[in-house]
Amino acid sequence: MEMESKVYLLDYGAGNVRSLINAVDKLGFKIQPITCIEDFDKADKIIFPGVGNFGKAMQSLRSLGYFDALLNYLRKDGKFFGICVGMQCLFEGSDEAQEEGAQGLGLIPGRVTKFDCSTRSVPHMGWNKVFLHKTDASGNSTPYGIDFKNHYYFVHSYRVTPSTDNSDWMLGSTLYGEDRFISTIQKGNILGVQFHPEKSGQAGLRLLASFLSDDCWLKGPCRTLEPEIPTDKDFLTKRIVACLDVRANDQGDLVVTKGDQYDVREEGQVRNLGKPIALAKQYYEEGADEIAFLNITSFRSCPLQDQPMLEVLQGASLEVFVPLTVGGGIRDIANPDGSVTPASEVAGAYFRAGADKVSIGSDAVDAAEAYWKCKKLTGSTPIETIARSYGSQAVVVSIDPRRVYVTDPKETEHHTIATAQPGPQGEKFCWFQCTSQGGRTGRDLDVVQLAIACQKMGAGELMINSIDRDGTGLGFDLELIQQVRENTSLPLVASSGAGCSAHFQQVFSLNPPPEAALAAGIFHRKSLPLPVLKSELVAMGLEVRSN
Ligand code: 1PR
Image 1 (cartoon, rainbow, N blue to C red):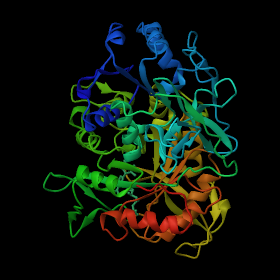
Image 2: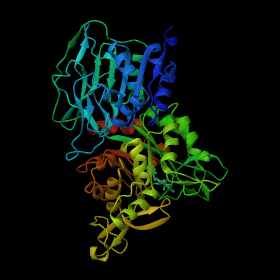
Image 3: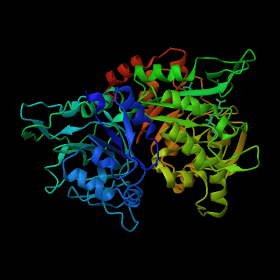
Image 4: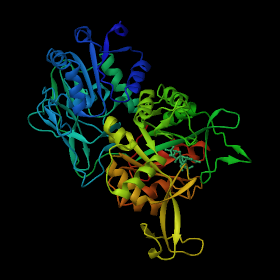
């Protein structure tokens, strides 16, 4: 019977709603888009997965004529689930929206404001916990299946701070550093979360299922809990990213491969370590917090409709409910008829296919070099155009640096470090040179220059590979990560060289540490499966997400 209830999706086309649709589908429900004002009267339930930015969301609601219809629906206590910006829109307004007429729905007192980025990385990106402030009359302490034991996936730069005016709405709060913000709101039939249930693995699917199946605790008076909120420590986990380097092998099959210092051939053949979608599903089930797909032959030109990774993303997003990143070939694409598909359209195609973030390699190096030539932003680089349309959190820059040794820092104008791993001639200094085309071309740009320029352009995260460490199992290049860390406040993903769990512990012991660590070979070769890695990290005292 419940299968027939009309669940509507309020979408204004700003990013990846594919995962939410897939999650609802996976749970056995059907969801249909709202296409006209009358749909608000027909709906039994509405899900509003705000993606992108507050101003754009509110302007879209107004221009589509949905503002009043949604407000009426909410005032009548219609069943509603707002996700991320979809929850923020219920408040009075947001500092994110400069546009005129971008006030919020004003249902809940309070304003959405930005995290302070002087003390920690912004956006708040990753898996964190929700402290619950209410139970139902019977003392059920996991309303909607939300459980303090679980972690949920957050990605946002703006948040609402609890106040006496909105305390009756606050169902859950979360700490980021010492900053406590509202992460779940609920009153009557209206529910909202700052995190993404469709990206929060099994814990998120349980919450969605609870909303969809009416298995709610909403009826009857509730009791207010005043949980002890520790203010000295948040529960943001260290993320573990499983990376799949994808390319066609010599037989033309799309396979996951893996290089040693970027060389993916063994006895002349491309290493074949499995099929991309099957491996992604396996790593998701084993507890990967994120999956990255890199098209490592993206330097070959290929029109958008022939991009093999689109199909991979479509397939993976049916089965994988943690964030998906896709990289390789995110740039302006020349088509056979001479036309050009701009990078933001290429990215848009990947978001619609199910990606949450795109990762930009070679094009970021070009853009950073151009930036340092004139020290001005053009507004037209792929990083800028994609960040403007889809938000900074959706733009990762992937760096492929290699060490260049010098005996004296005066030999170069690049940012050098004194290294504890001297060069082949005993050189005691080095700089980290950016490369493009997967390490094929060395550039006159170092990682510090790249990181600074990309942050200015609006990138949301940096993935730091190392050609020297890739596939070696010798551990992450801690000096490289440290140098980038000291020069940017962007969230960092340390990559290349992981061989055992102690290597993760080392990289997460940097001060300040990177937000995530990525590995490939140890998972593909099963020398350190994800469940073993995670349990060893827990034993080492690190906050990681349990499956
Ligand atoms: O330049 O925007 O088209 O993007 C190309 C992308 O493809 C870049 O992100 C680049 O890093 C990647 N890439 C290109 N060639 C290779 C190669 O290996 N021949 N892969 C390549 C980079 C590095 C990581 C690897 C980690 C962890 N591979 O993806 O997964 O080093 O490995 P490990 O744990 O086994 O040490 P564009």
